[in-house]
Amino acid sequence: MTKKVLLTEAIHEEGMNIIREAAELEIAADPGEETVIKAIADADALIVRSSKVTSAIIEAGKKLKVIGRHGMGLDNIDLKAADQYGVAVVNTPDANVLSVAEHVLATMLYLCKRLKEVDNALRTGEFDRPGSLPGLVTKLGYTTQELYGKTLGLVGVGKIARRIAEICTKGFDMQVCGYDAYLAPDVIQQAGVEPCGSLEEVFEKADFISVHVPLTPGTRGLIGKKQLDLMKPTAFLINSARGGVVNEDDLYQALKEKSIAGAAVDVFAQEPPGKNHPLFTLDNVVVTPHIAAMTDGALVRMARDVAEGVVSVLRGERPKYLVNPRIWKI
Image (tube, rainbow, N blue to C red; front, side, top):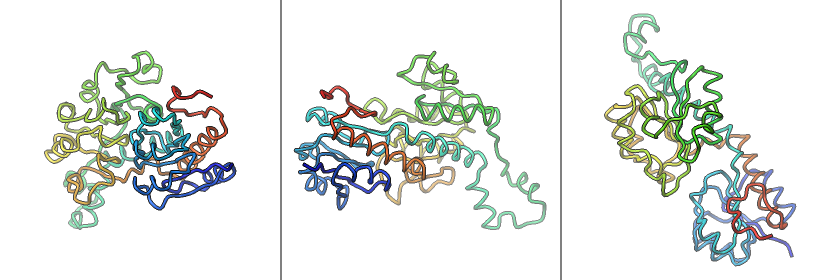
């Protein structure tokens, strides 16, 4: 009997072609819970991007054998329910490492070179006065920072963080320190990162702080006023991990009061964020729509990896990126 794979949203054609060779493919009308529940009754597999896979959806999938996460994070999937119903979960942990690392580097440069501010100042005529442009840059207070010699602090030292550390040390001669509650100091050191004894030490030492932890009950609200108050007034915070890890109200206050120099925010506690989000009113923050992994290469790799993982399970083969091996009995 032909297997059926339900997608809540389309993925790159390369991934969908892999599925079509092994199963019937259906794309839901929308990724909402009610729509997916109606469509999943006869599906053997479900593939999602960032939409929620609730216990109600998993329970409704009477034939469901595998859930594929098009991406790395798993906070949108009810893993407890997946375990309860014996449903395998696969993701794509290697696919977006390069793309997110590049995004973090891009935002670091964007912030320290003050591109948003100087672009706006030039366009609005602030430099339309006597004097040379370099002289006016100094006079008007628009000088910028170099990455050279600065310290990058990592909150979490996984694959993406390690790639960023490598680029920063080799490409910009930066110092890199980091804290990871689940890694021994010697493991962090082997990655070329100076281990910090606490999260707070990272915030005290770094000129740029980049967040790289998943959203779990233990990391929700991990970064708030206590940590932000430890930052240098010249330091920047970059969050391309998950919105709920950083307390957005506390970040807003720190940016508004200019107790820190700026921030780059790619992820939000509520996605998509409302158009009146407080962070959108500030000039010292760059906001992007969860775009760090949305590159040409990463989209192909994520689609291919999730499709291959799902098809492997449907064939009775153990997938490469199995999230919940405790349920695997084949």
